[in-house]
Structure formats: structure tokens, C-alpha cells
Image (cartoon, rainbow, N blue to C red; front, top):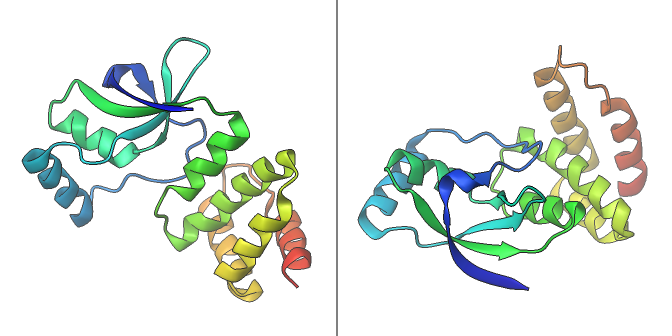
Length: 165
């Protein structure tokens, strides 16, 4: 069940292992102007934490914009979500760069695997990219992660290739 409430921004923590960057590019400047002129049009999506705070699922750019504009609180949808449900919503709600998609879909695949819904996601992943393009995106991501001691790429290339072909 989802409810709309006003929360203090300091009480909202980032999503654990959030794979997307908040770029302060031209579209971010437009978001700042929009919030300055119109206020927050789309509430943030959060879930309660065990510590009594809230974890941000969707709205990292909006939250940063609000903070930069001096806001102390924001309208938020609060939803009770498992870790897997939160991961799936976080991936689905973010507009992401192609280089971030491979890592995000890996997170989502893991979450869906726990829920037994693998086939729906795999069809979406396979429709999003031709297998060769998907492998290219994974390799781009691996290059960006060099030196971070993360080596899941070869295993995932094999798994995704088998699922998509």
C-alpha cells in the first residue's frame, strides 16, 4: 500500500548500491528551474528502513535539486517493499545511460531471480538490446569498473547470452 506524506529531506537516505549517477547537466539545470518555478510536481518514492528513516527508491535528482534550492522537506510516496521489490522499482524508474543499463539489469536480474520471475525480465532485456549490443554494453561497464575488484562480467555475458539466444 502506498501513502503520500511530507518527509524531512535529512531523513531520506540514498538507495543502497544505487548504480546511477546524478549528473549536473543541462537537464538537471532545467529540473532546478522547474522546481523553483512550480515546486515538486512528482513526489519521491521511498520505503521505511529498520532504523526509522526512509530509503530513496526513485527521485535522486529531484532530492538533490530540492536540497540545492534550500527545501527542508518533500512530498513522498511511502511504500512497504522488500529488497528485491525496491531494486526492481529503482531500476524501472530511472532513465539511465546505456553504459549503466548492463549493471542495472544485472541488479534487477538478481532481484527477480529471488522472486522467480526471471522470464519476464529476460524478455525485456533481450528486446532492449541485440545480444551483441548487450555484450558491448557489459564490456563498457567492465572497463569503467576496472580497479574496483568487480569481476562478474564474464559470467553474466554467458548467462545473458544463453537466455537471449
